[in-house]
Length: 123
Image (tube, rainbow, N blue to C red; front, side, top):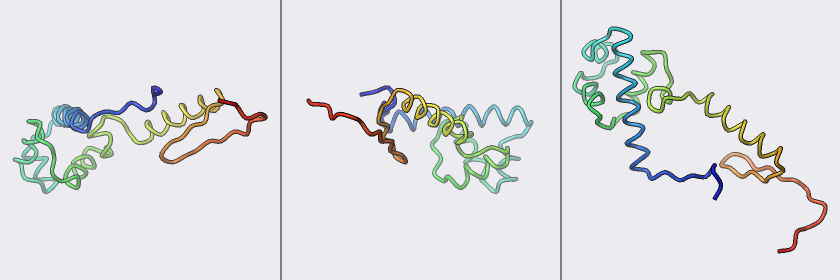
């Protein structure tokens, strides 16, 4: 197994992403001088829902999280995971460029790189 295919259990990934949402939201509220009440009112979300997220409760509606992200001028990924899609795609591109340099076959969800070889290897 290579270092690019590390599998993280779903429960651990959800817990880690929740911690990021909780801390990111708390930081944003402090930086912008906004209360949970004001945020909820401006976004059309109950104050208790915002308070639940701040307490670490998993969001039930991505639409509501998206409204909060847009309120602060962030993407959903930036609010929930701390990274933008652009950053993740740049990392993917850098890793695929390195793989091509190393003459490896890179398989992924969206791409497949094949290289013609002069002689078949015998196993």
